[in-house]
Image (cartoon, rainbow, N blue to C red; front, side, top):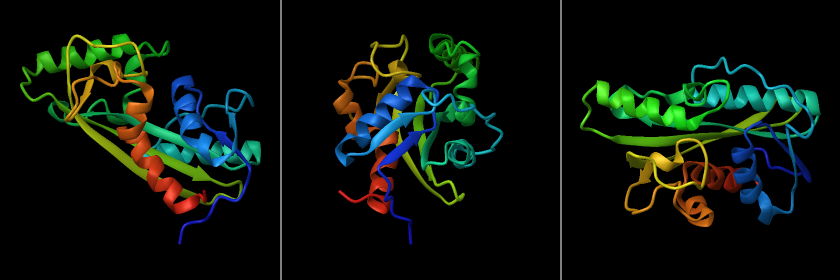
Length: 201
């Protein structure tokens, strides 16, 4: 049985401002005080895991041990079928030290062209890991299917959002109103599973 969250404060163990903002917005209805890892000057551990779950738990456990508070971490990425799943867990690293996702999106497109790939199917995966200072973790995976467009469209969202067109929609994540994206995103899917298991409303 999953552990229930009974605290009033929660650290979002991410130095990505876009991710932290999205998670804080999703948590807003629960009346929890949200603190960012950046605000606490928490270290950002090297992501040495070989999966989204491993990296999310690594980040959450590290932050919880230092902050001595429950921490919620996200590991997510773009999985492109024609590129054998790349960039996958390396999605952020494709953007380089400067986190330049315009560069990362251009790299995805170059790789697709190099593979002469007609298949532009992709999906986003997000894993949310909630870890307590005693080391206990609960992890939940969400995903959303779509196709990749070029050139990118829209300046909302973050990361690869402007090139990702979710199945059944006419707007990319970069064009969507944030509330519409939150309703269908990979992070929202993982968040629904997390709250059903660990949170009371």
